Length: 447
Ligand code: GCU
Image (cartoon, rainbow, N blue to C red; front, top):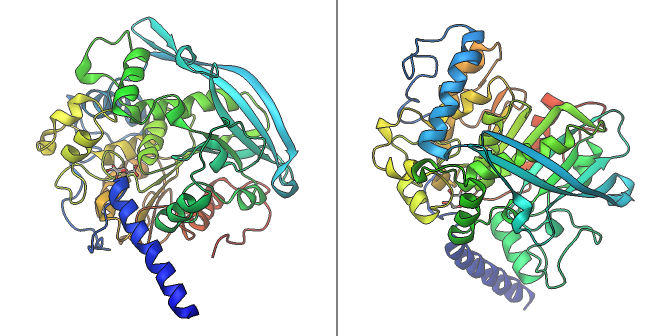
């Protein structure tokens, strides 16, 4: 009887899980596996070759001073849309919610920020359309480890009260939870233990702070409201073809949080690491490529428009993504669908713009929709820029050789799209290898 109950319950979960996967369009279930050897075209064009009229680069100073501005400009015009000419961030309020939170490990604060984007001298502030007069950032600081703490800046799908599960975090009276109840159980079953809530206690024990925002509160992940807000903020930019998309704006939001935390001495200014999964993994790469103050990136399953190459790609095509999510990228990128080989840039050059800063690309073998093999080949293509800048770059010739200490680190596990129990231990290993200060025991979490 018990065995029957167990198996029917499991079956029910699997049925709901598969249905919700199909409905969510957050992942595609296939029987395919990503090949563990680089398979297909190598990245083109080579990152150090002549580009947009300039000659091949063989000096670090030339790369920094003349190649990176050209590449950023090309990504703005052909992929993400144009970024603001100038930006600023206003800290409207800082509230301490609990100075001994998470088992006396961390101090929890909530900050209210507002940001201004300037395009062609037209300045527009985010808060003009926000109920609360600004957007919230939950900041958790470790209290048991010495020195300024490296910070993991997170953007997530889940509302803040699920990401930072503490009763004092602001939430509307009618707020739904994505991590509780049946919905939460199914979401966790399908997308993994850490899809909403990271292992906060372990993160604090290892000496890292967290600054978490819900980007959908500023730019809704929705073609109607999202596009309207993108257009409002970029009112001074006349060209619809190159107007910024949500991925660029979510990347820009990471930088607005950096504006606020870099003024606070509790945080290590050499340890600002952006973290994002999937669409926010795409945004995390943009943030680091455009903002040199960002010191590291964990971009998990970022896929198309993220770390995976556009050319000859399996999994999600540029056409499919830009049709389903027209608010994510510029119209120019959508127009290049089917003609990706003619684009002057590909995604390995976005990774190269982050060099020599540490990047972790997280992947799963059955998540072929996000094309792990294409992300690996992009890392291979970016490697020359890392080496030019004196970094070891990519230290593996197959997808499954885990080198968390490499500056271009590539992580792949079994399974599908999500943030599962094996992922955060890998993220923390990478963080410890590159950003650890006086942290406590490096024992792995999860398991
Ligand atoms: C969809 C989309 C991907 C995206 C993912 C996510 O699957 O096609 O491009 O990365 O959602 O954000 O979860």
